[in-house]
Structures are given as structure tokens and as C-alpha cells.
Length: 285
Ligand SMILES: O=C(O)[C@H](O)[C@@H](O)[C@H](O)[C@H](O)COP(=O)(O)O
Image (cartoon, rainbow, N blue to C red; front, side, top):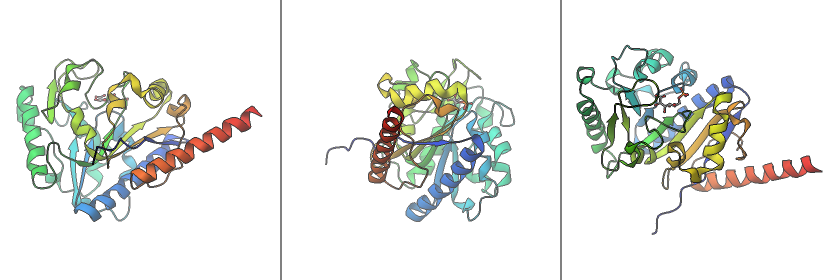
């Protein structure tokens, strides 16, 4: 069968950040249930940035099978694990220290390798290989849930526009020492890994992201790193935005509900388009 085109992005817009945080927690827990039902465990990858703070709603969620979680980091700065620049540390502060995930199921970089970026990336890739070889890895690992941010230039994880790392196809994890913002020395999962997942979710809040969200959703042809994360069938991609970030995009928001497969994603986006067209026509009358 020829490869299916990716499902359209599903866009949820929330009145404020608190509603976004609650809805995101609800979504992550549903994704966990779905993954555990289908595959017996839940592999999640977290990217650096404000995402960590938006995961605080996970604390206190009921009926979560924390012992089934395997947590990885999409990108990480080459810094000590207790540094405020560490992605791991931000997520510890936000929720990981308050939930009973067995520590060996939280996969950090090896802090003894911080001086050698290549080794640091290779060792992290090895952790992925060890983990996914037991389950689903063929060419690339398939995460159940990839949680991502949107950077000011359309970067995601540590994949920056115009950077040579964007064309990496072999490695699962690579490194850079010239990040244009924040800590320069980092490792990052590569684009094929971000794209090869069951669900990718971009989380974005604040006015300063409105222009970028508009570009990514309304002009994907510009090929910014965020627009290039379009999981192939049967993967799905979602955008969670607060109303400030959602201010400029014309992409129709879908009513927030669990979407299970590509057909449901297509139907939800088609229904959202009809609603948006109707609202526009009513406004013009
Ligand atoms: O180190 C970083 O900053 C990340 O690698 C980057 O891709 C981040 O996810 C976005 O820039 C969004 O970050 P904010 O949500 O903090 O704006």
C-alpha cells in the first residue's frame, strides 16, 4: 500500500493557560491509558523550555499508571542535572518529583560525559536503542507521546532553522555547540525521531508566540522545523495554544476531545473548518 499522507494537525485553543494546563494533563493521561492498553507501557519525550511548567497539571491526576512510564528528553543542555538550564531539572521541579515514576524509568543524560558532546549524544542514543530494541524500533523508535515547544524562530527541541542538524537522517540523537539561544552546547533527538511517533503535541502560550504559530499552522510550506514534525500514518500531531498564542492563526480550532485515529482527526478538522466558515459568513452579513 502506498504511504498515506499525514493526518491534518489538530488545533486546540484554550481561553487561558490554566485551562490549557488542565487539558494537557487530561490529554497526557489519556495518551498513557491508550499506550498501556495497546502496548503495555508509555514512552514519553519532553522538550526543553516552558513546556515543563505547563506539565504541572499532571500532579494529582487520578488513576495514572506511573509505573508504566518511561520518560526521555527530546533535547538537553550539556549541564549538570541540577542546573537551572537542565531540561530534566525543570521537569523535576514541575512534576517529576511529585509523581511516583520509578527513577530508573526517567532517562537522563550521563552527567559524567558533559565535556564530550559526541559521547553524550551517543550514550543517550544507546539508551534509546536499549529501550526500543525490546519493543518497536525498526529504523527509528516510535514514542507514544512527543511533547514539544515552539521557539521564537520556529525551532523545536534543539533543531533550529537553517541548521545542518535538520538534515540528519541516520543518528537518533545528535549534538550541537552553536545553539543560537540559551545554552550553546546541547544534544537533541533528530527530526526523523520527532516525526516517527504515535502522537506529537506542540504546546504554546503567550502573545509573543502568536506570529510564529500563525506561520507554522497557516504556512507550513515555509518548512520551519516545527512545521516539519508531521508524523506519518498512523501518527497524529496536535497543537495546544492559549488564546494569546492563538490570536493570529486562521487555522480552525477543534473542540477539545480525545481523537483516536487519522479518520477522527480528518473529521474533526473538517468540522472545525465548516464552523469557522459559518462564523465568518455570519460576521459578514
Ligand atoms: O532550549 C529550548 O529552548 C528548546 O530547545 C526549544 O526548542 C524550545 O522548546 C522552544 O524554544 C520553546 O521554548 P519556550 O516554550 O520556552 O519558549
